[in-house]
Length: 133
Image 1: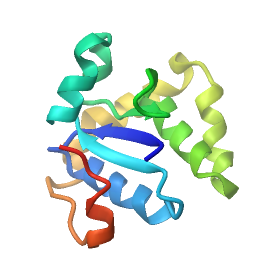
Image 2: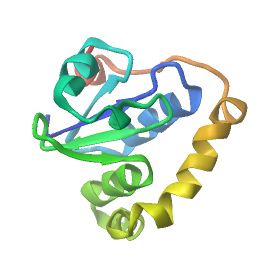
Image 3: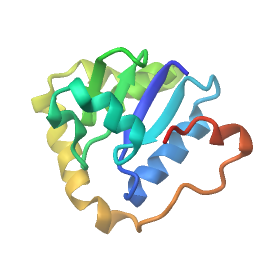
């Protein structure tokens, strides 16, 4: 595991996003943990509280470092790290958060209307080990 993505474990859109990342992550560089879980609880003990908001996707690059990306910059950085043509979307991680986060926050605010609540399903045994409690 190189990078860890914290996501809202109760959000259907977040689960869909995690499945999407898994499908693109052929190098298996990402692992995942719900923001409500023990891994998040332990990791965020000494970290600024606004990182662990329920409406935020959090990327910890080179886990367990404290190089943290949140919201739109986290999404863009994930695409950057996936590489290839996806780096085109990844350039947004270099934009100031005040420029890109309003788009993310709009989607985050309406995410429960966009996607039904669901669990991550259709994972292979190989992918199950990518999830931390």
